[in-house]
Length: 95
Image (cartoon, rainbow, N blue to C red; front, side, top):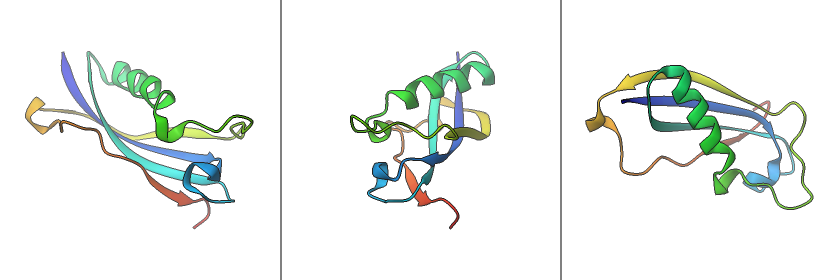
């Protein structure tokens, strides 16, 4: 299988994820092994849903307009894949 580097942006997530009272967005880069760029996108989405940093506290619902975009998906060499995926860079929406 191939390796893909996925640059991801999330928008309109609850600020509680980053200790903010306002809606937040995030940037992150994820590496995943997949057959095609489309498969890579689906795997990254599934993985993000299980990431501890994006888990909402009980009773907090995601806004209906929360979205995740893939800025770029590119095939990379296995030697370019880090041992650990990067964290998240959070920002307040509108800034």
